[in-house]
Image 1 (cartoon, rainbow, N blue to C red):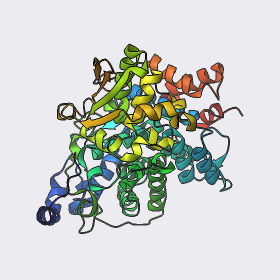
Image 2: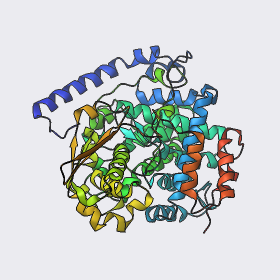
Image 3: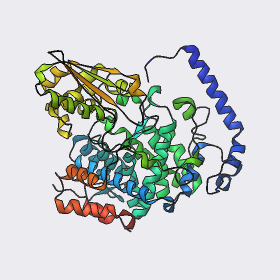
Image 4: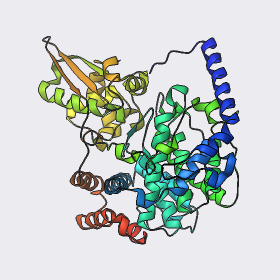
Length: 506
């Protein structure tokens, strides 16, 4: 990717092409609705008749029809593993200031039917979704999906959990909603262009969260489509969230999308309708935000495709996903150097996306917040060179303002590398090269690390990460009880026990 502005004429050409494509889609809609069928022979006409031609309706039809029986054993295990990882991240962040703030807001509403994770207190499903997802997201340590756009599908799990409890659903119902949320979210991240157009990936969480919540509410397909319409129209996320000096909202943007998605499903259940067609309309998402894109719902998991949850990665370090390989490379370079006074210069070669998002802006060389630091290639590499690792403590106020790290960052340059960019998104390679005062160079390139889809973590790895995350708040016995419950989630008839097990010690 690059920041080069389009010419006026090229923009006009694209707008004209978009108008033609949208008009063509609308004209052909009745035909499409009549002929689109799934691998199992379900036609959209069953639910919508000849009017079943827009993407919101197609996604709703998929959400209404997918069943737990469509999941193979591996998909179920992956779903449980990623949910365990998300819960561990949530507990780890329990006392962080923004997480406490969101929790206090959520719990200021008395009563309710959905428990906020880490407590024994309840609030409304949408506010519990916000609080749960905010905790999952805070450390930037939960999962990562790499499509055309990157995203963090497990953010939506906090909403699934809140609605599942509120609706009295089983562990199997919860797993169905989680896999569904991942499928919709990841397929949209594969298809839609957001970042270069100035928008943010939580947009993809809106329909995913609304459909997962609506499925748990057992909404009919028509109301599921309205939940999508309502979720998208009023809640478009701007990419300023991830530009310049980053704020608390970096970790709250996706949880807010999940909150809005749950609220949209609640409204749809009461018969509220939303703008349609929300994707293809003359002022819809295609026209205003993403440009036109194609999604073939017949290729989704459970029809003829592989469930996208199986293609997600798990973070080995709490930092922006594009920087993770740079951490591993820098740790190896630092170990070999030993004496950091010998460093004359450091070059970080990375992908175009990582350069734009984590290595280009001047704020990344002088981070003042945790959120900026964990999205800063120069800071992260300097810290990993010196410490040999990146942990939650790497982003404390004192660590971020450490004078020796600031001095080392002055010697660092970041550049995009086309050969590395060509390896994405399957891999996110980074190369760190240190030039020493005696003229020698030490260089390491890392293409993937444990946790990425090409190097999946095993059950014991997930348990170890979970234990490290929650150790401050849970003893060994409580950890074991939580893990045993979650590894058997598909056999749990009631989720009340889980919330009891997740209450943290003072």
